[in-house]
Length: 146
Image (tube, one colour):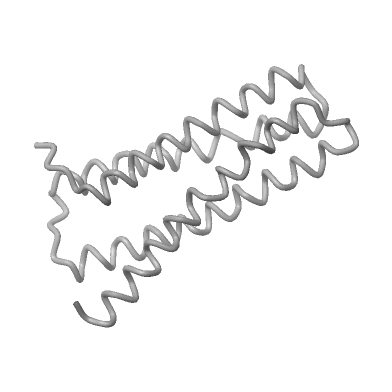
């Protein structure tokens, strides 16, 4: 394994950790958001938005390094786990683009029932975590799906 490939692999794994890790920090934060006083909601929402921003940028590095690994590793783009990973990745991109921003906006503006909005935020968070874990499994296990 070349030094270049090892370096790309390192940054790919690091960006994968940064793409999913911040969301596990948000799980206890959602619990706090359910019972927080109104004066603390803006801080919690700010932390949530920051975590989403970190995940988005880490995702850019993840995709770039993934393409480089495909190029240097010699995996064909038609390999089943690669196709499945790309499909789930596109689903997660569209999901992330629309999942959190409207709910966080409603929470910050005080529109709607807070418990209902926080519950929705929790469901969307776990849905996104599930999508990321499926992608992670495809990349690590490299299953032969067809």
